Length: 457
View: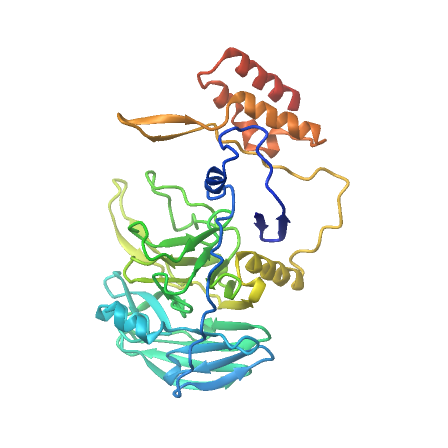
């Protein structure tokens, strides 16, 4: 069994038999029980071993070669409405438009039928400050000009009905695809004001589980949304703010579920584990960007993930002390260029661990991180323990014990025996000790926890 621990910036692969927990007897040595244990969130979900090789798509005759490097080729469709990227080493082809066979089977409505075939999605404010959405096709956009650039092409898109123009540059750089929006090329001379742009939203999109794999999103420490034929009914897509909320113009609803912070501007998608994948990195405009991931069943039957660049935000303008006012939006857009880079992986590197390695190399090449050479000081440790959870019972919910105070204390003892110095400031467990001590339990357990907590102060 292989257990994979992956953190962006540090990736470790540990191979070997898992040892039984020293502080829990929840699982027996029965093989079936052990299989269940490895499917919980503490472990990497087992990947299927019978995935057949995914056949590459054919590049239609209407696509023209616009740029190439030692490893990639970029093909552009009519009027720069669609793009294909071919891996020269493996022959695999990534497309910005889903397979035509899938589109026929999906029977999309007019709006989404236009969206999946468009090079971008956008949101805009109309003259009444109403936020509206559209795509290249649904808004009747045209490609005003196309100019070659090193490694690719630059197009100027015009939406005459809104008085909006902007450029999108698509090119290859070494082993990556770069999509760029220059702020100086944006023109807004009509009733519409740009709110957001999503480039190549359906790059690599998969219908249901027609291709095995998953989407990677940087939710908290990272999460995977696996492609499935049957799945829970999703009410909405994932939308995460890179680096969190902008409190100058946004506010958190008191009753809303707190978002896990996005600490790194990355996302990814896999076509067959250990076969093909890409990692997207938002380079410019990341401080006001979001990451959108749509599972199958939300609007379409496709899984797709993309960056969303915010140009303007809506807000409520108060006009009186009694909270009266009106909805409006930023008069001036955020003045910054916007760029996303796609790094492609294949073979043994085509999974989320390979994405982590690719991002680590990316940061290392740019001097953002450097290999740790060792330290004479203490390395911070974050130790969290789940005390209890609840599950549905015959009448209401019932509490399920997960970690007792004795087991928690034993964990601290094991850490101490390993010559680890742990302080409450490094571990949320220390900060929560008072609350845990208030939980009904034996007085001996409470006293032992407080003694342990006191010895670490």
